[in-house]
Length: 53
Image (tube, rainbow, N blue to C red; front, side):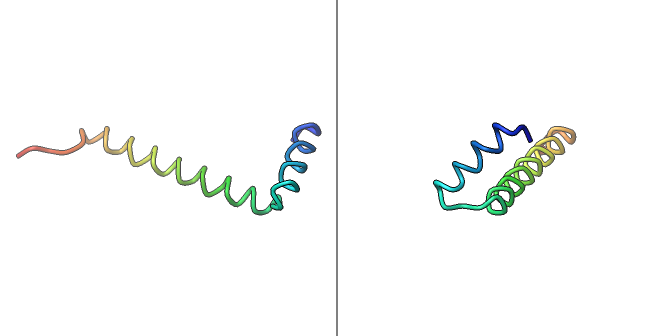
């Protein structure tokens, strides 16, 4: 992580009374949630969505 980004993030987290662990846990949860939603959407489009008949 670039030093300036690290410094800005550290300051923002301190202001928000949060920790790096909290931040990265939330980021990981968001990433996995988004990834899973995209995978689910991709699999729906592969089988053509809903089937009639």
